[in-house]
Image 1 (cartoon, rainbow, N blue to C red):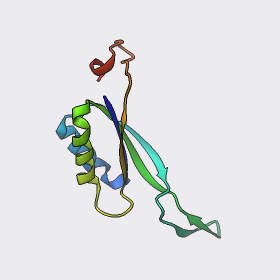
Image 2: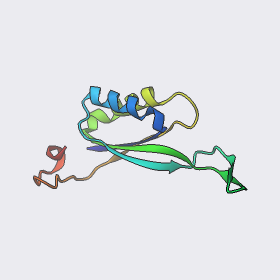
Image 3: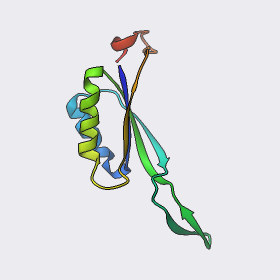
Image 4: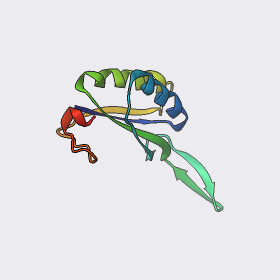
Length: 110
């Protein structure tokens, strides 16, 4: 099993979610995160000039079969990517998984 994680810009989330559903992804964990992506800009906060280098992004985590990981990365890149700062996608091996409700293990827990 693989964990496919992606950090994308928030306004691309709906399109990515639709594309993943079309592919057959049934489970998805979503988090709001801040990413330090190298872009710095100044903002005025309570009369003080501050430098902002964190921008809001959405993190997606999907546990999938090994054979689906490359396709998921491709789908996310195609749908979410269009300009600098769109985010990152990475894949991590998953040693084990247990479904809390049923006790199913491994691939059966997907």
